[in-house]
Image (tube, rainbow, N blue to C red):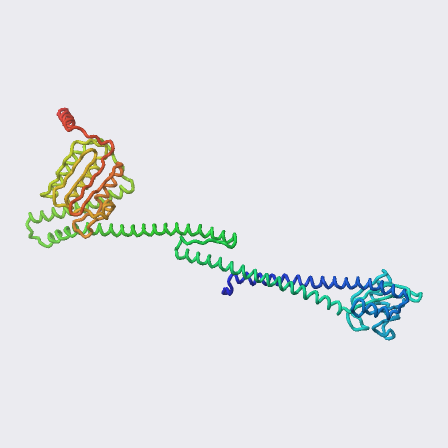
Length: 488
C-alpha cells in the first residue's frame, strides 16, 4: 500500500489548479481556433469590400498598380492585386512577374468566382512563397471577361490575431491567479477544519467524551460533527457499560474467592478435629472406653457441624434460585423466641438470653421464621460476651448485644452472602447467617435494619409480616387452657 504524500487540503488545491488549468487549456484551444476562423472570415469580408472598391477605381480609369498602392496605404498593409484572364493566364500582379507565373485557371478562388460570382480560399502561394487569404470576383477588362483577385499574407492576419490572443492570455492568467488564491484560501479553511476534526478524534480515542467539535466550514463537516457526537455518546455509554461489567466481574471473582476462603476456613477446624480424634483412636488401642467415647462424640459433633454447613449452603442456593416458597400459617412468635433462647443458652454455657416480649400472632412460614430468630440470636451470642436482649414490641423484633460492634463501612455489607467482618477469626462463620435472614424476610415482604456502634454493641431489628397482631397474654392463656381441657 502506497504511503500518502499529500494532505487532503493539498490534494484539493492541486486538483482544483489542475482542473482550472485543464479547463482553461481546452477553452484556450477552442477560443484560439474560433478566433482564428473569425479573423480569417473578417479579412475575407474586408477583402470583398476592397475588391468592390478596386473595381470602382478601375472603372474610373485608374491603373491596377495605382489602385494597389492606394489600397495598401488605406488598409495599412501590403495588398497583392492580381488580374487573371478567362483562360487562367495572369495579366497583372503587383508583387510578381506575370511572365513567370503559372496558369491560375485551377486556383480554388478563381474557379469559385467563375461559378458563384465570388470566391475565397486560404492556401500556400507558390508564387510569393507564403500562406495567404484570397478573394476574387469576375469583371470585364478591356471588354473581355477576367478575374480580379486580392490577397493578403496570413502572417499579417496572424500578427493581429496574436495580439488579440495575448490579451486573452493575460485575462486567462488573471483568472488562474484568482482561482489559485481562492483554492489556497479554501485549503486553509479545509485544513483548519480537518485539524479540529483530528483533534476531536484524538480526544475520543483518549476517552475524553466531553470534548467539543463545532464545524464551521460546510454542511458536510456539520453532518460529520453530528455523527461523531452521536458516536462519542455511544462509546461513552459502552465504556460505562464496560466498566460496570468489569466491576461486576471483579465482584464475582472476589465473591468466588470469598466463598472458597469462607468454606475452606469454616471446614478446616471440624475436619482437623475429626482427623485428630480419628488418628488418636487408631494409634492408641489401649485408650480407656470413657475417653474413646468422648472422642467419638467429638467426631460426631464436628461431622454434624459440617453437615449443617452444607445444608446452609444448599438452603441459600435454593433460596436464590426461588426453589423454596414459604408455607405460611398463623402461629404465635413468642414460643419460638423462648425455645430459641433456651436452646442457645445450652450451647453457650454461662450466657443469658433475655426475652422481653408478649404474644404475637403472625402469618408466615414457621420454619423460616425460626431460622431467622436462631441466626439473629446466635450471631449476637457469638460476637459478644454479655447477655443478649430479645424484644418484641409493636410488630418489630429486635436482638441487641453489647459486643464489639460493626464498623460503619461494613453495615451495608454484612447481609451479603459470604461476607465476614473479621475474615481472620477462626470462630467466624461463612457469612451466611444474615444473608439467610435477608432472603427469608424478602420472601415475607419484610425488612431488616442494623444499628451498631463500635465498642458498644449492635441492635438488629426486623419488621414482622404486615398482618402481625398483638394479643393480650390473658386471651392467649385462656385459649391455651381450653385447648388443653379439650384434649384431656
